[in-house]
Image 1 (tube, rainbow, N blue to C red):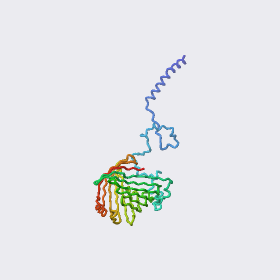
Image 2 (image 1 turned 180 degrees about the horizontal axis):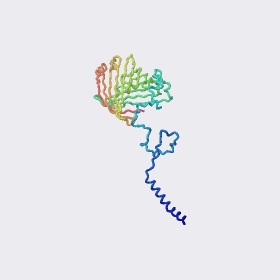
Image 3 (image 1 turned 135 degrees about the vertical axis):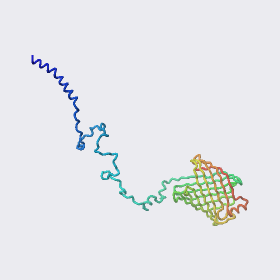
Image 4 (image 1 turned 90 degrees about the vertical axis):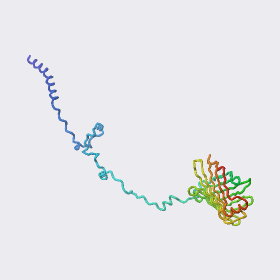
Length: 327
């Protein structure tokens, strides 16, 4: 009986003692936190960073060894000692100076034989002016045309110009010339010229040059040696000013000179004729372009006197309208 009583008291007192023991631990002061890890003594090389969750770290509270990065003066750092390196002041391999041999290699002389890429023969016919004019002393027609056939270096040139007035041909000529390219922009010409006039047909030996002068001036200068030793020359300069891709303004200046007087041919020494024109054309295509313009002609010196004595006018201003085509 006594033993049964002791067992009952133990069963009743056990839970009560456990509950009071738990309250005693709750009311007591919390246990001290474990000491902070000393990172300076930690061997980071043995830590497995791949399994660490860096996103959960509070970077703002981490102590990076007392380094205050915003207050650091990077300009005083010895980057060479830190392993970053510095750019060299001078190139490791100095750039050599340009020599005359380098310039000669960059701009070699033109090899005309190499420019003849193929034996194909090409051709062009340009009617630069085919126009009707209305001047102070009448009306008429005029033309100027030229063409060539050949390769890139050697060509056969044909040129012609003339004028009609009052239903008859006042002047006309035909030139047949051999041309050879002496540079990318210039050709040298040699050949013959034949004048066709009602009472003054003459044959000339012709020597000249034509091409594109600086600033894109189309230039032609030809000297003529005629019968009886007469020397004459013609110089023509044209320029094309693109107002739009199709609207083009073309000024022209042409002058004729002679070495000596020839009254029988109405030709005086020195500058005997000059023409200045301005033509505005519209290119419906590159091959076909109508134009309008104005032209002024004037005779000088003894040439003017000879024509005036024959009852002809020595100057004239003309309005012109025509077409420019090429094939």
